[in-house]
Length: 137
Figure 1 (cartoon, helix red, strand yellow):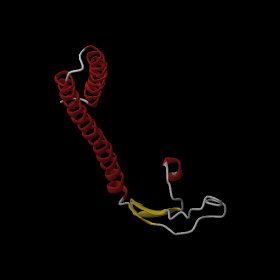
Figure 2 (cartoon, rainbow, N blue to C red; figure 1 turned 180 degrees about the vertical axis):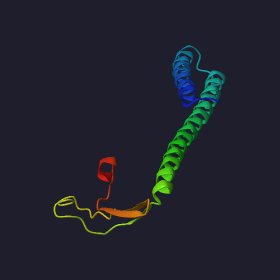
Figure 3 (tube, rainbow, N blue to C red; figure 1 turned 60 degrees about the vertical axis):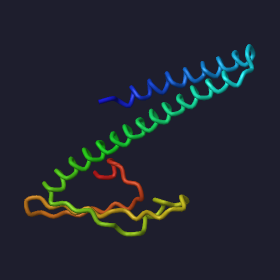
Figure 4 (cartoon, rainbow, N blue to C red; figure 1 turned 45 degrees about the horizontal axis):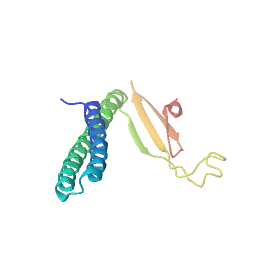
């Protein structure tokens, strides 16, 4: 399997070749102003553009696959915790505490977490529009 870095290396090399072809075209035009030379260089540049487009598409696909893998791993780990604690997430209240969003022009919706372990159920509501790990403790 080809890595994203390998595609990026190809793209770097192709870009360098493209610049060399442009320089060659300039030098050839100075020496021989014929359409044959210009057409040949134009064909080479079109081929280079095709390779660039292919490499960029492959890089985008590799990025998407990496993102999917990260999210799938995250959700798999989260599922383990949810299963262990019979947890659920609900939409929390639609208000924030005094000053929490003051002056920011946004209203936090937040979430309500419920977890049950060994017969004990606990609930926590976090009223922020962006929640990070430190908000969970």
